[in-house]
Length: 337
Ligand code: NAP
Image (cartoon, helix red, strand yellow):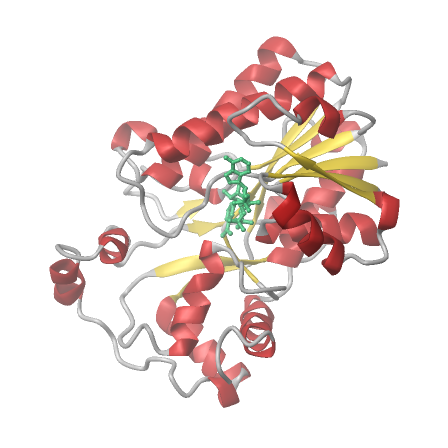
């Protein structure tokens, strides 16, 4: 098959391309700045030749999308803004996430493409429900409770996609992959916001550990879910949501795992807890701490069991994922060993 992967420069987009090429498919990919990005992509897959074609297209502009979709059998729509800092105006995230998804769907439909996999997020599953701590593919984030802009952007984009398909292309085989926080091997220093967390744990920039936790998934499993969602029989995946999540870990447990699995790189991994009062105080001045403040003590345990059962594979253990993240950050020279 020939698959369009939007956002080929991204952490997840790159891994999806990697797996598609390894499985013998051809890939079209969109990037925002082709002269800058194409050499980087060609260097990563020197053997791909004509099996990889790079197109310039922005989520907020029609240019390039028709060409990128031409001749494709399926789309993995991965591109969406995922910045480290929270923007002042939430529309910087919500508008491109929503409009970009609808643009990708419309151009895919016009090109006669019948299968579309959206990279959504656990952000569209597990927020705005303060009294709940276990979540599955059946849960939806409640936007009426007021959630941070990134969470809103992913929820709005997935809702909009499902509504659009129901109204304009009910025959389309649409499904979403909903990863929790994604870690795993990195290929260069242009890495995702999620991997920054492990980088900060091992490079000493987090001196004390706040009382917060996250679910962990491996970028290789996220790619596997996308590729299986493209290759599986239509009725297995139509309308589905595929959370990828191996397990929930407190940050102090992540630090312990890194100490056990990669002790030679764990010299700067923090041991002591950051008291909640200090997080609240720092949140008055630091944006990053504002985000952490809202998560203190929260459990958001998203189950990926449904995905493993329906798509037929087993997730990589979180301990392995964290070890591989640390080792690749050091191997690529992003963090000093
Ligand atoms: P990433 O490395 O930052 O990749 C984001 C990609 O989106 C980049 O290729 C970026 O292109 C592209 N993009 C952003 N704004 C765009 C625009 N206006 N027009 C065209 N392309 C645009 O992040 P990632 O972790 O791989 O995230 C990929 C997807 O997974 C996103 O949809 C994200 O919401 C989702 N996700 C990520 C995680 C996680 O923990 N990493 C968890 C759940 C879901 P440029 O290179 O040009 O900026």
